[in-house]
Image 1 (cartoon, helix red, strand yellow):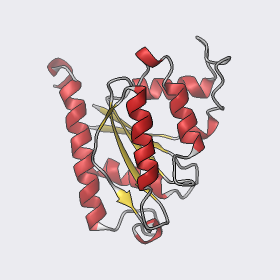
Image 2 (cartoon, helix red, strand yellow):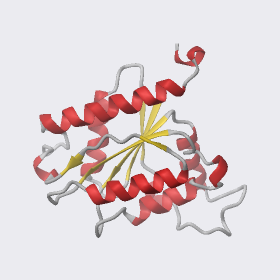
Image 3 (cartoon, rainbow, N blue to C red):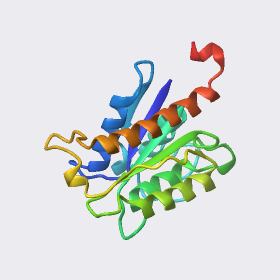
Image 4 (cartoon, rainbow, N blue to C red):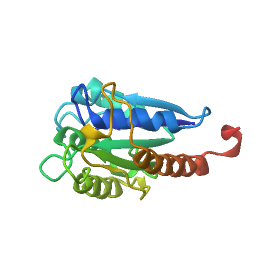
Length: 187
């Protein structure tokens, strides 16, 4: 089984990317985790470019999402909402709506921010967007406020309470993905 992680932060030392790496450590040995890092290359959505041969970065994102059994998104909060580049990437993946790569796919949302609230508004907005796209959004929440105090200098999660919350979300997402995989493939 494969879980795809996408960070909504493009920053090299991103707390959200670190949160995804911490999530990967919590997944069982039979779960493959891929951290997709091509978001920065995805161009602004343009319906004129949304053809059978979309831009290469768009095709790569769509392929990565389609090849995963579940998706874990980690978002910072910019101006009380979703970062533009993450929303843009999801706009590309959402096309065509009826058959997009996220349709009926288990997705979980977590978030980290330097502020006190841990990107809760961005997470709520992201869940709304994902539901509109047709994803099966897992409702567990991990809101990492004051993220600079929750990770060490190497980007490792050092907060046990956050790790426990993250474990619950990861376990729920993996269980939802396993429920969708036919028994012959799961074995």
